[in-house]
Length: 112
Length: 116
Image 1 (cartoon, each protein chain N blue to C red):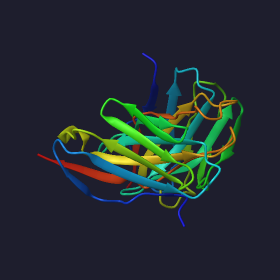
Image 2: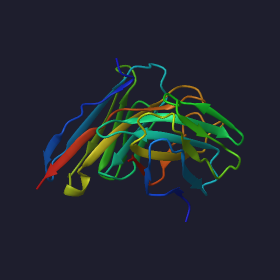
Image 3: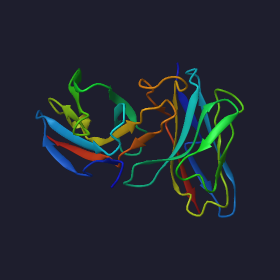
Image 4: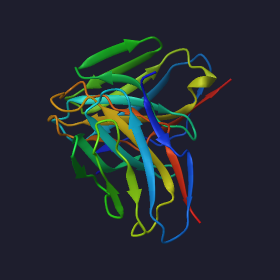
């Protein structure tokens, strides 16, 4: 079992709709969760961090965390063509020395 | 402007050569990291450093070496012992030591290495 799992996609969503990206993780003691956006040929860009169960909203983005189910998701409202990218889920363990483990990413395509 | 710079953007290496990739940050971050990304795959950790003059191996350290003589700099050397070095190399930094939860990593623009 991979430590951080994501569906590779591609996930195709019509413009203006809600895109839902999902991620599961294996370490129950994980404390910190991150979503990165990576455009083709570019480096990852941090878009959301979440540490507590529940929802965290930032503009059109909402991160959702459920530690009991070991599940974190990212919702993108009013999807735009510029949202087309690969989204990487990343998880950090409980200690300050813990490494961040990245999933392989979900490729999102917003169709006009 | 605060940020992370990597150079060069593109690098071509002949087999048997060692090459060094540069990473510099002016964010005053304690921790720095090197990742490798292959097409269609996630990021794999090569080396990381949480403080000057100290670094640890990541998951795929064989064939790579690093140094951390200054807080701002964390160069990566890809040696001839690395059998398949063609990849996208990403440097990242974070506030690091003592920060448990809010330890977000920020990435440089990357170096694309190709072995000829």
